[in-house]
Image 1 (spheres, rainbow over the protein chains, first blue to last red):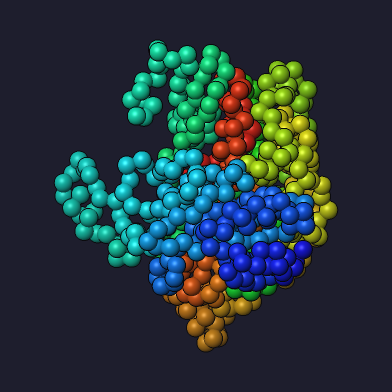
Image 2: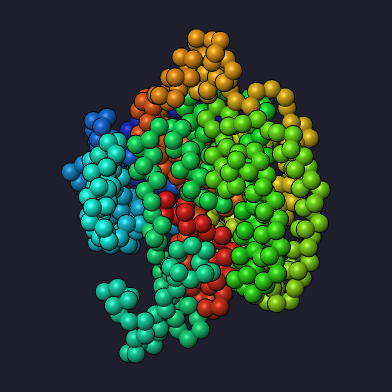
Length: 177
Length: 399
């Protein structure tokens, strides 16, 4: 199916779940609210003409700088191995209550990327069996891929040479502040 | 309470908690898995990652598009051209640039050479893990030739950064093409040699057949990709299903086996090496003449010699070096077939010269939960074989 056909099919089957659609560079993109995500996901996987049986990835985006409302977005990249077509599902996530239901019951492959969303963006994945840090250390504070999390050098905690240490701190390059 | 606090052995339980890694030689990097053992049998396997996290995705949001390319080399360090290509294809899709046929063929040659080199590393280390030392030495010998070819064309042996937005970094040299022709003549006999050492070897077969089995449905549901998926009988190769960089022009087969065990993953990869050689052979033989990068000077640097004669070239050169490429607003995802499976970049651009968000779809990262699922119920001796058969690279897992 082409992108247009996929969008038409999804729109006609679940008219009240789909908020918006787009067709950038011919890729099918649908926008849904978090509470409709599981319904849409189950439909996309089970419908025989769509059959999105493969979850490529789940990605998060923080639109803080673009001042978009809602601030966050989770992007689900789906693919159908039998039909060789793909779709992107974009879910807007509120800043106050960054919560999105899990799709790991539908695609087991979502377990890891969803846990990464929690780690890197601080989304609460409702129904996910393991809501803890994945890549960052367990005691880490903050969510690194948020846009308000600065990219800085790590403070030097130990050095044999005191002068060397203070020099290093001073010579921080300006674009890393 | 962490596992280390708990102590490795708890006497009031029937099971034993066993820590494997992150410094274990057969975990291929810094992968740690905590095994709950019932005697010799693994009851649960809990993966632990993040030891190699370098924040490449965060860094990419603060660097220009061209500066991201060297960092993509370091993600899957056994497949630098593939990562470069995935990133460049996504950027080019947003830019809407046409790539000349010669550049596409050079990209294909580089990617297929990297696939062979990556499979050689995999075969050598995987066989070494299971106990076949000789294969490791042979594989390293052949990989060395590919690294020499990399050095000839890009000046670097491993982190080539050869594929750039708009084309490739340099044109092919005569010596490089001759070296590839020599390699094409030399290599098939060597693949037969590996096969002679392993394929019918009873110890190898005992250690690999029927172990770590994943059915077709399980493999799809757990998001395995690449050779691991094709060993479970799924006919899916992105080079065939959504051809990019002119893969539709080449005549090659996609090896598929349906056992879903370690042995079939081995067979798929060895056959893939032969098919990659086929593709390289066709690409070198019919290497199109013409530009090795797009003539669009808003994307790629103008030729050096024109800088002294053309004002416009000088301006383009200055703007590209000082400011970089400005990519139109939008978001896109482009997958390619890497040695480990689907590699793709999801790029969000806000219209500036710095990407707003760069997300790597890493096949090794997605395969880890499925791999640990495979381990449950198998013997501890097979854990090493299962990790090796999935071929994880921690650089792209932790990013």
